[in-house]
Length: 431
Ligand code: GP9
Image (cartoon, rainbow, N blue to C red; front, side, top):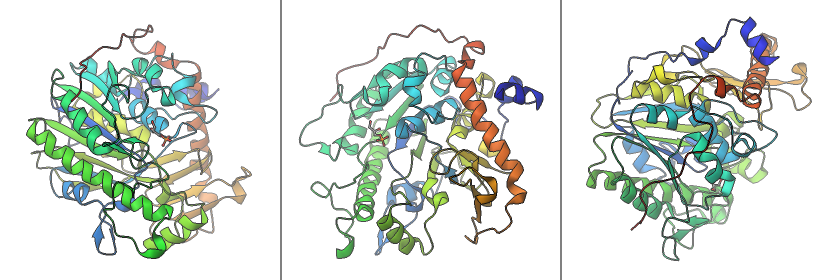
C-alpha cells in the first residue's frame, strides 16, 4: 500500500535514486573516505564549556577551517540504537521499530555507501572495539557491503587500554590507523567508537573535566567527562592520520549515533535545562553533530538546514561525486535542500517530525488533536497545530514506505548486489 501511494504521488524509483548536485559536488572525489560514528554524542557539546573547561576542543578546532558543519542534524534510530544509526546512515532507509534491522533484514540486498564506494574503486572496511556479534554486526556487514570487519576479537584489548565498556577510543583509533595505512587506496573506513557509552563512568581511568561536587557521580557529569575523553582521542587520531600520510588525501567525517542524556529522566532534565538555560526537549536530545572535514579544500560553512541520518548517504555521495551510483535513497542531499524535514518514530513516535523551524510530536495516544508543536528558535509552544496536519500525514506515510521497502526486500530489484554473502577478508595482525 505504501509503495502504491508513493507511485500515485509520482514519487517513483527514479526520483528516489536521483541525488541532486550541490555546489560542493565532487569536492572530495578520489580521497579516502573516513567516517567516524561517535557513541552517544550530542550536538550541544560542540563549542560548549563547563565551568570554563572546553568540552570538545579538538572537534571545535576542526570547525575553524576546511569543514562543513551541520548543526541541525538529528538521530533517526529505532530499537537497534547504535546499529540503527549505522543502518540509516549507510543505506538511507529508516530502521524498523519492531525489531533490530541488522538482524531482521540480514539477508536483504542493500546498495548503501560501502557498495557505492566499492563500485567506484574503493575498499570498504568497518572497525569497532566491541565484540563482533553485538547487534549482529558480524552477520550483517557482508550484505551491507563491508569487505572486512575489525572487532574486539581482532584488536589488542588488555587492562591498559580498556576504558569503560571495553577497548578505549584512544587505542581503538591508534590500532585502526595501523590497519588503514596498509589498506589499498583509496579506501572507505567506517569506525564506530565505544568509550562514551552509558553509564559514562570512566573516572577510574580519566578525569579531564573537573566537576562541581554536586555533579560528581551523576550521569550528566560523567557524560561530560566521557565525551571529553573521546574528543581527546579524536585529537590524537587526527595527528596519527597526519603522521601516516593519510590526512591530506582524505575526507574525515564525524557524526553522533544518538543521544547520551534522555530528556525524560528527571535528573538529566534538571541538569541539562540548567546547562542550556531552557527546558531540555526532544529536538535537543535528538540533535547530533555532523562534521565533514576536507583538509585543504578551503571550504568552511555551517549548514543549518534540518537533516537526519537517512540524509547522510546522499549528502556524502554528492561530496564524493558519485551521485549516479545511488540506486535508492529515501533521504535527501542536505546540501541542496531549501527546507529540511526529518521524521521520527522513536521517543517522538511515528508521525512526528522536525523542520528547520519547528518540532511536532504526535501525542502518545496517536490523536493528532492531542499533539504538540514548538518553535525551535523561541522554544515556545505553538497553539495552533492544524497547519502541520499535512506534514504529519507525510511523516506517517514516509515511515510506512521505508518499512514496506525493507519488508519486500526492494533493493533486490534495483541493484546487482550478489545475494550470496561475500567472504570476509583483509589485512590482519594489529600492533
Ligand atoms: C556496542 C555499541 C553499543 O557495540 O555499539 O551500542 P548501543 O548500546 O549504544 O546501542
